[in-house]
Image (cartoon, rainbow, N blue to C red; front, side, top):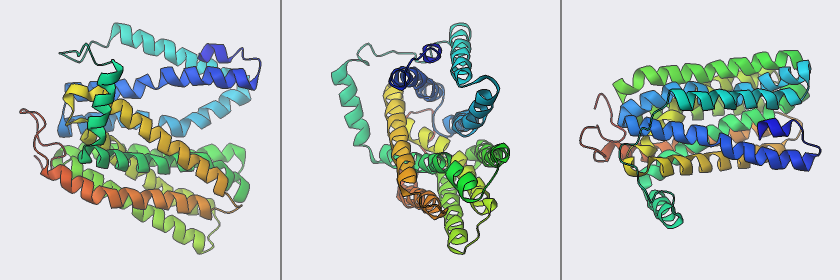
Length: 327
């Protein structure tokens, strides 16, 4: 689909091909999360997902930078050629390096009624819903910045196009720092506590961002500075939320991962649309939306992590779902 996009003759054709491109691309994060859950559980899965999250969450942030330079150097076709080549590399890695991680495959896993039953079970589980909501609102704050940062930084603050990427790079470094902190500390403090701390950081950075906007501080770092810390919080919350949501369901990790991803991207799309509709020529709407995402993450994280700490072990050889302080 990526290669086909390069020969699209109309916008409608391009959008249609992009749909199929997205269908294929969505398999990557869904399967990577499921494989991590097949191989590990609890805090070990959280640590693996944190390491994976350094890349999986960073890509949406740096993709506009890469795409912008590809478009400047070789035109818009270059981005789709680049993605197509990445797809070829992924196929080669799948064939040569990745073995089946599920030891007891379910022959009925793809049957519609079986899928519906699994999704219904997931949506009735409060721990799953709590962690999924934490991850989704955290990611939505990231997506809000991706959607609105160009309007605010370039349109409001007058940041030059060549400097826009530098501010984006600072934000990306915040995310990498958050995932690295989570990778090192989750095994020590526990998955649930890491989610709670990340949610607290998200809310605090969002409040600071709004405060600077209301105070009339009209400088790029008034938005980018607090958002660096917000992105660090995403690196702490999102991978741990995925691990906390998937750990209780070893028998349907794929369904749990796919539902999580669907809700995550749907929530991000809605927030991105809200950013576009609410833009009024100032930074305030964007900061309010990011702050709202941070506050919602914190409000949900408090009961979600408490329930997770009291959860019983999902598997005999693993610690409780979101164990604390060395469990």
